[in-house]
Amino acid sequence: MKLLHIDESSAWRGGQQQLALLVAGLAEMGLEQRIACVPGSPLSEALSDWEQIALRPGKHPANLLTLAGQEGWVCAHTSGAASLSAAIGQRPIVHRRVDFPIRAGALKTQRARGFVAVSQAVSRVLQAGGVSRERIAVVYDGVERPAEAAPADVGPGTIILAVGALVDHKDHRTLAASAKLLPQCRFLVAGEGDLRSELEALGGLELLGQRLDVPALLARAQVFVHCSKEEGLGQSVLEAMRAGVPVVATRAGGVPESVGERGILVDIQNPPALAEGITRVLAGEGPDPALAQTYADQHFSVSAMVSGTLRAYEGFVSGLA
Image (cartoon, rainbow, N blue to C red; front, side, top):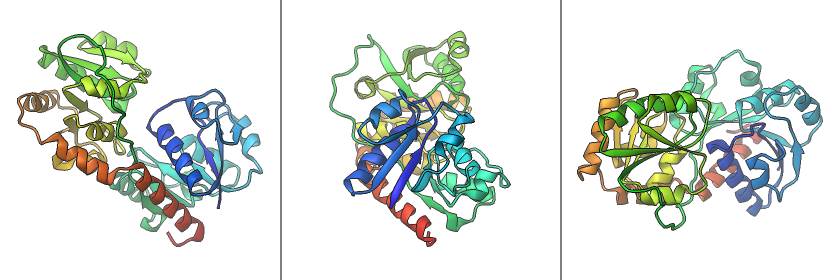
């Protein structure tokens, strides 16, 4: 099986991180792979040892010419990549990481050979959009246990940490409202995005920007909080669980599938409930984070993600998925 992975994003978020881990894992299994991505992007740098096809960021028309005629089974890792693949007549295997509704009649939906969904919640959204269950394989993210790191030097205080892009569905507005209910805590957010100015104006959050020292931040945090209103699975939640940090999260998308009773789950867009969950953890009333760590180690490993993805690919290619 020869694979062509397509990701036309310049970002370095969960999807790009999973793709980098996937390519490395499949290479160890002997698969031949090429990556179509944006030169100079974090993904391009992370996969610099592999043959790359240069794309422009986003759905640029020039990308159609670049991809036309390329060989191999096409794996689209973003919505834009799925559109590009369909536009050049390919039938891609589409990775779906978000639980946003889909358009059943869209060309990229109809042309997809199959979908690799990051959670059962995403699978249900795809089925609601008209995708048959036989065209969907659920493969959870794989995360490595964070490397041992000295706690980040972020100053004194009780640290509540969130990790995620500053975009609408991550709902940092709710986090900011919760922060104002707990003035004795410091709420740190690692991530960057278009809503930075709005969140700065709201106050209550310390916006750290994109950080490369997340393990050190996790080592310093008393609580990890995830307040999305829509979420495919929540890779950062898995990383916090594997680091042994207590988790308070919203019941968004696939998050309950990973956290379950191993953390505290609250309703979305409910600042008092989020604040109450954090208060419970700080008072020692939350689930044992060591149990969550063990569960994450067993169920969300990189090797399980790689092998599960390969099985999905083989099934879709053979038509037996």
